[in-house]
Image (cartoon, rainbow, N blue to C red; front, top):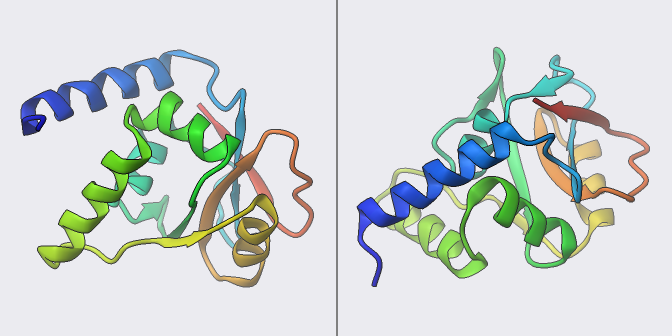
Length: 141
């Protein structure tokens, strides 16, 4: 089992990679049209999906994640630096300790777009090739 420090080091390395690259080559970040921001930093993105941050600018946001697929794999690798199992264990630990509620998990790009379009202040990720009508794309810096 990995120690907290080794997981933290991997997360920091992934954040540095994500921040130092042009990010989002294999995924795009989408948000509800009521989210005022047009961009998000790689660190903010990581923190939102790790549930250690719940806002973009002044707006509190609700993240939605995919259960599997190319966009999910890309965000895990490029920004979170962990496997799907490690992310699920992270969410379970936060829920168990009462520090957070697990984000809504859906099965496809279309479900992410639908949820984000119909929700206030929602943020999610989809494949780079997904059609994003009804939501706004956030540039990742």
